[in-house]
Image 1 (cartoon, helix red, strand yellow):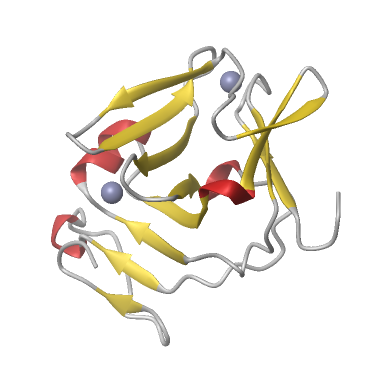
Image 2 (cartoon, helix red, strand yellow; image 1 turned 180 degrees about the vertical axis):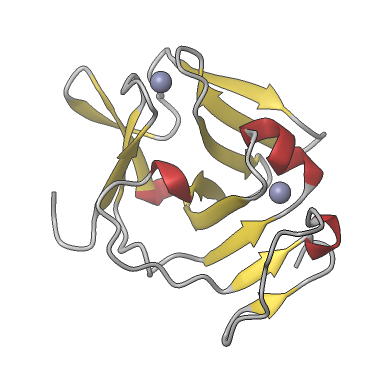
Amino acid sequence: MSKGTCGGNCLCGAVQYIVHKGVNDNLGAAHCHCTMCRQWTGGLSVTAICFPLSAVHFIVDDNEVDFHHPPPALKSYRSSPTYVRQFCGTCGSSLFFYSKENDRVDVCGGTLREVKELKITEQIWCENVIPGMEVGPTEGVKMFEKGS
Ligand SMILES: [Zn+2]
Ligand SMILES: [Zn+2]
């Protein structure tokens, strides 16, 4: 793996991916507290790290392929007219969400490996934070009641 590249996988390993960008060279990294992300993952929030679609590749049968040729285990669910959420059909890990209209994909940050440092820039949909969960404010992190 070259410098600045990071990889990730689902819980069972059926979905393996590589991001050809440093994890802090992202287009934005946010903790999202929206109800859809909570229900999708079962967590209280999702840490979404956005990359250009071309930066995210899969490893399928030891070969690297682009984002449009995922392994068969990767399943899709259209959660809104424009957004697709992708997850492992074997173990259920939530992995990616993206809009077909934009050339970018949000990676669920918890599936990345070997992340030593990650700069979060935003917290979004803070109006949906579950009472009792601390979410900041943190210096350098913008807080949004709804989406940014
Ligand atoms: Zn899996
Ligand atoms: Zn969300």
